[in-house]
Length: 338
Image (cartoon, rainbow, N blue to C red; front, top):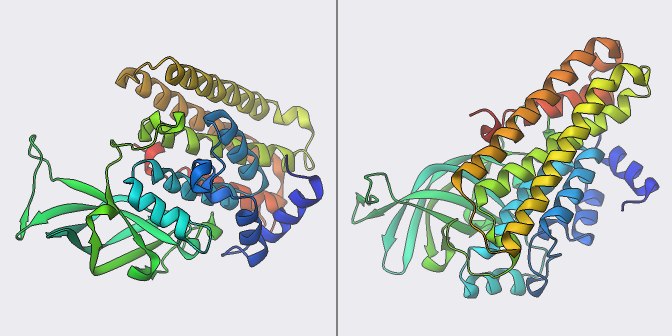
């Protein structure tokens, strides 16, 4: 639980900034938030799905950029479970600073096989937290002898990689109306030789912890969904000081129903893992659809109350305006616009 005075301090430090100040980054590191899902043996918090979602919701309620950045970066650190043990130990146990992964889910580059290395080049968009990262993650099509390798179904063969920030050129092109401090810039790589141990697949897991038994697509749905809920709770709190709470009823009910659903699913997922049950595609699709509909409902109720909030909500430097801009920037994430 975050103390009230610390919560207010964090809100003030995050308000209106385009990059988090040192005080915020120091607090994130002190609380070990980049490693919410990382096992304790690798220096992480090793939270359960339910506890981690509660943590992310609380952060999003403080500030949308704070919650979003920690969610995406801790979600990238989740790949510790997909790395070979030698690589995971090398990164997480030998680092002199707190490890922070982040990058792009797009396939925008190539990786040419060179003996036991890959020569990586390309440009990738939307690396949340780019200035804060120690390592960048990326997806690339695999080439051998200049020829694109393909899977049995004819699709391009793709691998994921984690490389140090020193191998990356950050392109400062994040110019959105909201989520400014997430600094979700593009990045480029040119002829970087990455050892094969830097390569991984979302489908291959080397750690036995329950959290890593969750398919990554499902994990991503839940961790992003909880952010929309947290941001909506922040708006509900701020709007309560502007208009009578009775007029906020629809948003409050929508939030409560969304909270009920997501934590019911989290409990079901943890039980499935405990019982060693599979995650069928239909079940995963059900959760994804519920998340999408929940976000649509939150969006609709937020828009409905906007005319009641007055000029303050349209004033650029007002907190209500920032929350609206942050929330509707967040809704453009590709998972929720498919």
